[in-house]
Image (cartoon, rainbow, N blue to C red; front, side):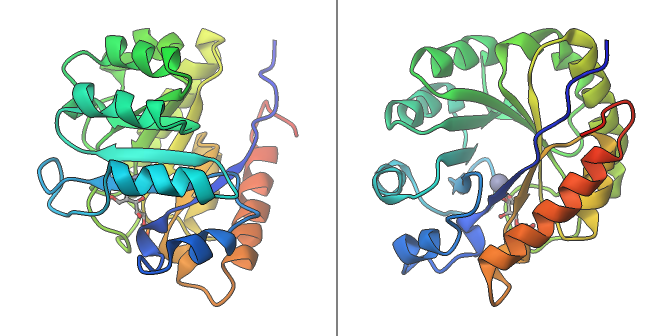
Length: 232
Ligand code: DX5
Ligand code: ZN
């Protein structure tokens, strides 16, 4: 049986937005599928952004659902609190979680989609047996920590293997890519099997973020539609 066509989602990252004006920055991307919120603690990654109090306020004012990407240590303790804040999707790093299956279950029990992220060099094979516990697998296409880095093509084979495993398992797990996504690299990532695309500088670095979202969406949909055996 052929898998059903994949839905292409464009999730702009507010890491490249104006942090002094987040509410109006969110209004500029109201045509996005979700807003990607990068939470960094200067421990798991060498950078510091925003934490729970700010994310709770964003949740209240955002016109689009929130997709949190937690680049923080002690994910087991903190991630459930983001689910409690009402976020649509909460993604923790497997490298920062003591008990990823327990944590994924806890996120779902608290009403959020459960996402799990892997650094570029973390193999996906160890986690394929827990796909049914996840709503999303985030395969980082740069080392986490900073926006504006170049897309790592070396991750493409991992995306391909993850897509094969997801399709083969029959469960519905989105494959998100994050880092260096542009109108050009989105074609390769989608061809490999990703269907949720995070873009920071390629959206907020443009004069019209909403037009940038549509340009990315067009290319992502094109590449997904030309994927065999999926025909949109
Ligand atoms: C990096 C963050 C990304 C980042 C992407 O650690 O997780 O979400 O904002 O930025 P670009 O699209 O500029 O690579
Ligand atoms: Zn991110």
